[in-house]
Length: 236
Image (cartoon, rainbow, N blue to C red; front, side):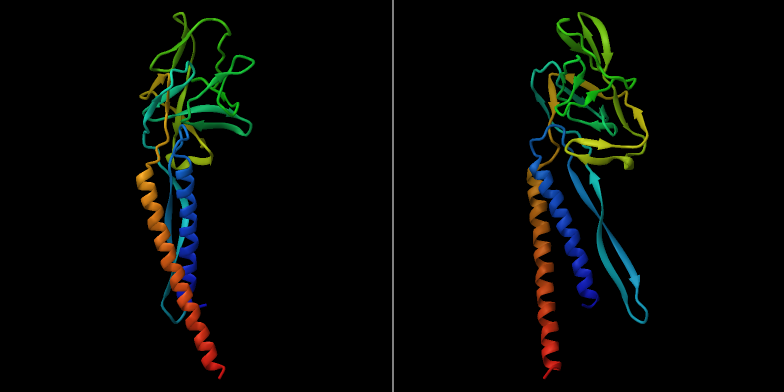
């Protein structure tokens, strides 16, 4: 296979990876707190000895879209939505993780946990405990939880010191390196943040990637026919 064939194969592989990311985004249109992802393409160029340079495409990394999504009112006491930057901090088996999905509930010990059982942490990094049968729980815009006017905890909001450290672990969960508290964001009780995937733009993107892949596949098929023709001619 010549240089053009290798170049096209690397392009096809990258387009396939981008199609997988697009399909994942579309599958999570209704997932609370989901962050849309994109693929970052890079070009690898190498000059060949005695010939032209060889250029190959590579889908090197994923880009996480952190734009604010719409809010959906649920009326749930422990449904929280973030307006602005920041993430909820959760206690996971492998260490602390981040999420924008704000549906919580008290577990058997009275600690607030998400749907996967991960504990919600307060501004100091400690689990949030809600006394059972103590009365209605209210939350202020700064995340302070109170019962009958008495504060019991403050939900912490955090963000990566370096935004490039943010890594998608799966679903609505992210990991990062050093974190810093967020003070300018607001919290709403009885709301959850929706997915920030735009279905129209994502489907349009899927069609564009599919057409680009089909063009590359057509080129490879024609190149294969050309090589077969050359081999047959030389073998006569």
